[in-house]
Image 1 (cartoon, rainbow, N blue to C red):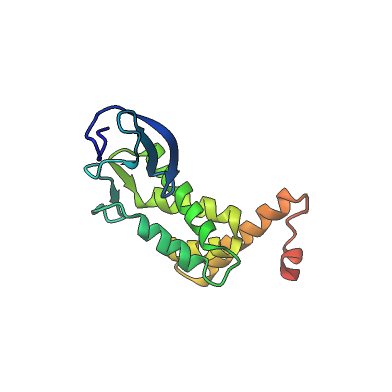
Image 2 (image 1 turned 135 degrees about the horizontal axis):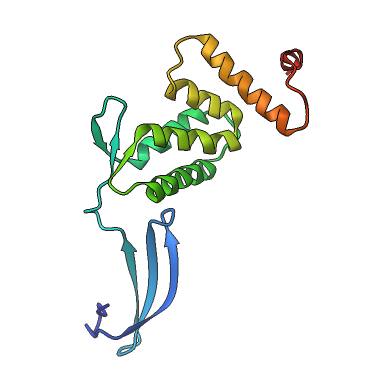
Length: 168
């Protein structure tokens, strides 16, 4: 890296930190010629484009903000901080970039969001699922909620008696 002060191409990195959810690396450098310090930022090239294949097979550019917006709606008035929402978006993004290189299906993104939301907050999960899965009627939604309660009870060592579901 060329020093912005003396233009020498002789420096050492004295500190590296990731920022913006791991998408940018900040490096603090010191020029070995003039001893001045400067900061550089390293990020993925903008020429990298990921497209989302929607249900109707149309393609749109990937936009992290859409995931954040969906998570914020699902988590509205729930005990989930904005930091937790950003962390959820980071996890979803990690899933996307681990499994996709040029295209990712909207179904994959939705499933990833639901999988991560389910662990954090069941109500937010049900809210997201109700919009994402576009339930045809209330019965479908009730089946989804009942299934989640059964899974919880089975994990906690309780039975899946429908009568106990009424009490909750």
